Image (cartoon, rainbow, N blue to C red; front, side, top):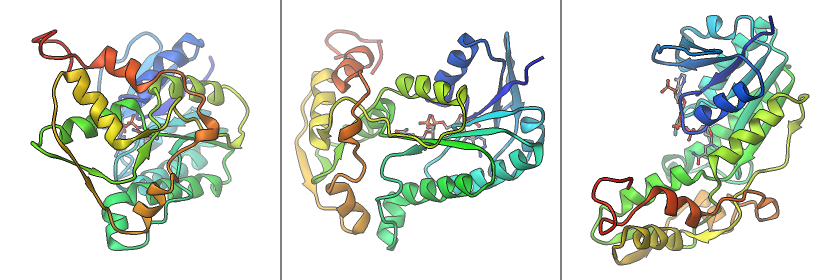
Length: 271
Ligand SMILES: NC(=O)c1ccc[n+]([C@@H]2O[C@H](COP(=O)([O-])OP(=O)(O)OC[C@H]3O[C@@H](n4cnc5c(N)ncnc54)[C@H](OP(=O)(O)O)[C@@H]3O)[C@@H](O)[C@H]2O)c1
């Protein structure tokens, strides 16, 4: 029987789009999650915590391919270190990692860099752990997912006046498109660092916020805020963008049309 493919973070925004695509490709899937859950046809859940290391041995046992989608705002290098250790012991033959565009270009040096953009430093450290692991590996860097941008603008939109970092731009990408690419990579041969995956268009952050407010049929004043530090400067210079790799197809507008409705159109639908 072929060994299952382990998907860490298979319950998250990206991972839960990876799992059905692997199933469609005929693979059995094992999902690592901190909470135990019921499996399904060809899908098995294993409870484990990458931060503590608990349950990881069982999760990697008998798997040859690992798609590492588990991640949080902080500490991805520690989670990755624990996974790499267990995967090496288990003799995995392909570790596929999802990183972020800018991981190598956004310097995280000062306290303010770390407080606001430590995520990029963690992703870079995790990338290096994987590249140095001795395991065959593939890493894909993607720009911010639509869902992550939506979460941010929704939080901002709760305020009467919206402080938006001046000069920041984003290139939102559909996580379904990222998931499809990860599956393609997981089923191929280990390829090292592959070309970035960026969304189809680059937007000023204020434009993303305005698009959301328009979709909600509402208005709020936006105030540009200057963010200090070297990481913020790198973002203003576009270090988080991949304009040469704008290969995603689904736009922010398409996403908003599907996910956000104006209260005048619906009283109970998605927000
Ligand atoms: N969001 C973006 O815009 C973006 C852009 C580029 C790259 N990425 C990368 O893509 C990956 C997935 O992002 P996402 O937005 O899909 O994340 P998400 O929706 O927040 O999901 C996070 C996943 O990580 C798992 N997880 C968190 N801590 C864990 C731990 N200690 N042990 C085991 N599992 C743990 C969670 O599983 P349980 O809660 O079930 O345990 C969940 O499935 C991350 O590596 C992220 O850095 C994200």
